[in-house]
Each structure stands twice: as C-alpha cells, then as structure tokens.
Image (cartoon, rainbow, N blue to C red; front, side, top):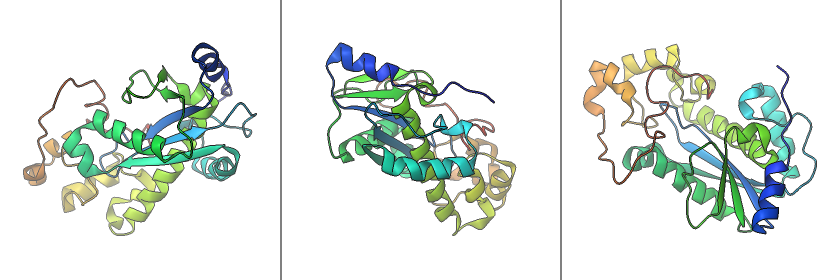
Length: 237
C-alpha cells in the first residue's frame, strides 16, 4: 500500500517555536499485548535524510523492519530503549508504566533532549519534558518512525527469547498479543510469569480467574488504561 514518507516538518516547527536544539522522537510497542513488557524507544535523528522506506513499523514486513532497524542503529544520532515489566504494568497501570518506560529511554540517551515528539494524542510523559504529541507521528515524523521501528524489532526479539521457555504460547509469532494459539495455550496451561495478570483476558478463562490481580487506580486515568485489553487485537503484532 502506498504511503507518504515521514518528514522533519514537525521537528522543524518545534525547533523554530521553542528554540529546542535536540529533539527526540518517542514511540512505544506492546501496549495492548497480554504478555511481555511495554517497550519505548527514544531516537534522535537530527535533520538528515532518512534511510529509504522508513515509516511506521506496523506498515513494514518483519523482514523489512529487521533490515531497516540494523541500518537505523548506525544512522540515528542516538537512541535508547526503556521497558516496563508485566509486574510494573499490573502494579502501576498502563499510563504510569508507559511514563516509566519512556523516562528510562530518555534518560538513557547520551544527551538530554530539549523537546520530545510523542506518537499519539495522549501525553503520558508530562513534566519535566517539553512534549509535542502527534497523532500517527510514527508515519509523519522521521524521528518517531525511527523510534517505532527500533522499539518493535527490539521487543519482538525479546519476546522470541522469552518464548523459548514456553514454546506452546508461540511468543516468537504473536509477540505476546492475542491469537488463537496464545489463547488456547492460556486455557490449557494458564498464564506464564511473562503475562500481565491485571488484564481482562483472565475474565474469560474461568480455570485461571483466581490469578487475576486487581489494581486500585490512583489519581486520574485515561483511556490508555483499558486500550487493548479486551478481545483479539492483531494490530500490534
């Protein structure tokens, strides 16, 4: 499917309006998964021409993503990844887990960004970071697209490693997201140590409902909290 390549338009505008010299693109992967961490990548690219074919990781085949990630690793000025574990997601909720993972990624960069372009409409990062949210930023902004690809490939590799110890769940294929194979394994074997135990999928597994964790929300929540928890969502695979 044809798509418009990402540009530096948002970054140039942010630099002009705020005086920011270092701008990081930030994107996440794994928010709607039933198992595994949520992973956030922060990427600094400058204003250089990107590798050919760069776009939102979800628009690329696995093979193309893998090749592009290898190229991006040396092309970006800097990048870093942060993760929040299933235990942290269960304890904190998704919004706080995303903030934690993003903060870990941003603080791991060799230079502190003056501003952040965050994919999506919700600023889950907040102060002290200067944030510009961009809906579908992973398709329109070069730095965010780079972060999208690097985060996706890294998390996929992590899930494949985790899956080696629980082959029935086929994490190397579904990367922790809902799938018929994943659900069948859950019904038979129950959740692994890699599963999120506060997720609503356990409501439809009577044999394992007793394992569900109930989190008491603290403060104001957003629709990030429930997104991706119900039904079968293959969009993140």
